[in-house]
Length: 131
Figure 1 (cartoon, rainbow, N blue to C red):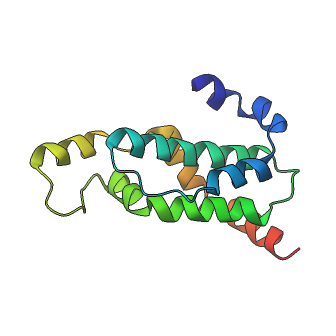
Figure 2: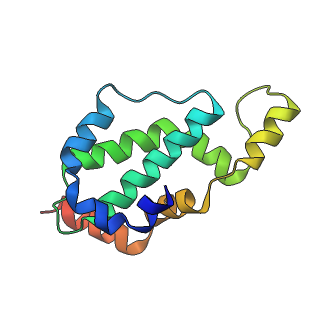
């Protein structure tokens, strides 16, 4: 994946974010259960955020916003756990807590998530919504 992440501006023009959003929402995503699925889901979210940012000339479509919203809602508990490094999922064993803490967000994923709260990103989003 480093090839994709390091060259997102090369890949982005060839992708139709509307169609990608549609495919990501049908069927509606569910909260991933296994550690592998959780990690893959967070990477999917990060890549979608990065692709959306790499196509600034493309209008921000409502479906794209909905996709980000649904993915964030679906993974909110997981993101919270990984950012804090603590487990809020009931009575899990000490070993599971250790594993979760070890699997904190990768820097690429956390960077993409944190970019959503950047002042310029919020201003851009508000600008698009008022058009």
